[in-house]
Image (tube, rainbow, N blue to C red):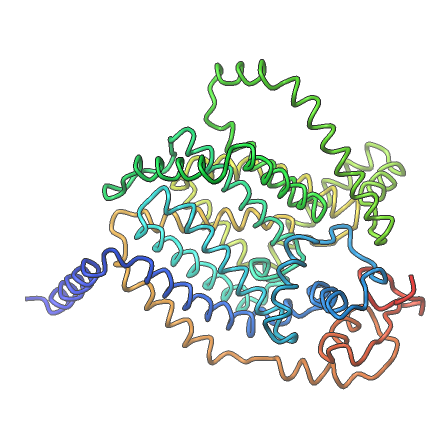
Length: 488
């Protein structure tokens, strides 16, 4: 007989019998997966993603929390237009009391990925089997690791997937918006138990829906759940209106994607008057709250900057600048982010296997995100390459590809997949760790006046012992997103 065939049959039978014995222990497999993936993500944060995670922009949140927790106040801070009050600063404040200050960006990235994976597990395990859900998570972590390594190998600037691990760059707000949308979708599924996901034979969908529905009726009445959604989106609006917009669009897509013409007519008849009154009132209240925060905490007015920029330009100039901005952005994508081009190719190849709601979400988000990209990047804050505004596309695309790989007809046996993750730990253990070198460099700078990109790292790596003043090229104080000035 063919020896290769004998070996293959032996391993297939071995892993099949091992998995049969492990049935009912998916929770232990989940804990094992989260432990291994956390180690992988920790090593990624300390090697490939270390420099971007510990850059001046990323250190805003831990330094802000440090001043807040040590009683130094926050009124001296010049905050960004999206202050990330929630959930970024809230999560960082909790981590501040548990972990060493100099490791906060790394720990934040690891914890963020754990919460993201747990959220995906909770959503998918209510629709498909736990085995398929864990396979999906392992594929998701594997793809994230592979393309992270590819981006570092090709020298991409910036590394496009760093936002999975970063804070204060719209990623956490986007994840929180998806969390709210997922909760709403779960509640809607409980009231109307239909699913776009195929059911697994071993999964009793009706029993699970009924239990969840009874529990929600007993402990989470409909009015309370609606209040929690409204409260969560209100926090998101005050923290980051970009993430708020994306969450609202995803919510609308999920809620109305399966409605027929009769449902639309019923909706228009019952809720049109209420919507016309509630929605404008809601935005007025949110803007009043945000306006009061802006005046007290020196938060820039994004709409004011945008209107001021558009008023000085004609319609022809706006059109010309928009077309050329998208063209220049595309060129930078080709020359600076080749790993992202490979990722986009994989997305297109697997797109037909995506769940239909995910397809609709991606197709509708493409023009919306491009619009926000132009409005914010070209006419508000003049970012030369604001790739972070397209981050939802990379995230949803990775979800779709992971789903396609986990749902293929002849899946890789589950015990093999955690072993493959262990190999990544071995690989990244040999990668250079720049922590000591970076810390020594910034601690050696003793100048009192430095540029913006040096001020936060010096303040961070010396844990506040050195407090340099950021200055512009002309020597004037640089007051953009900094807490260096204790007198406004």
